[in-house]
Length: 256
Figure (cartoon, rainbow, N blue to C red):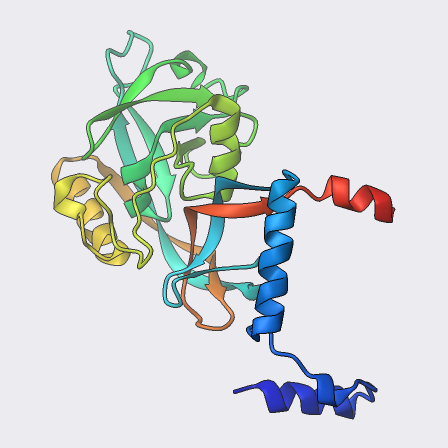
């Protein structure tokens, strides 16, 4: 669809290519070269596979690069939820309050984080809270990533659905629980009532269910930067997927 436009632009820019030898990336000659190179790098242990968070376009159903993502200021909300503390001591609160802009991701929480110097919560570090709606016990951890002045000073940690949380999860050896299907519906890692719901429908149900349990403290208006794909304009979700990676340093050293 775009080949003639691209070649026309190259000609207008004055590129003196041999236009009779134009190739398309999916031509058999190119595809064969790619397969050969991939296997060669794999044999040399320069290519490996691993689960990593990627920018996932839920409409195009594909990974997109950072360069293909733009942030759009959007009117949203801060939902403040109460997570019950298990066996609180006399000087500890019965609940720890977290604020989030994405309530549906709480179904994949594996910790609550506070700043190590925040005197309000120092007594809770090492304690355990119950993740509402799921019933999973998750720890309260201390990490410098947390901003004491932002929100409640307590952050729900979802390593499988946030890039910063993913790094914190690696530091504290937290489990990665992916609760999204590729089409952004809720998968079977979440409790049964939410499975199959679109993430926005799940958001409404999570908020309603927490309110019914008396665990919704308040809702605040909040402007936030929402990542979108520049081709589809769909909201980009961090998604845990199997990806191939190339070890760059052994290839870069000879060039340097």
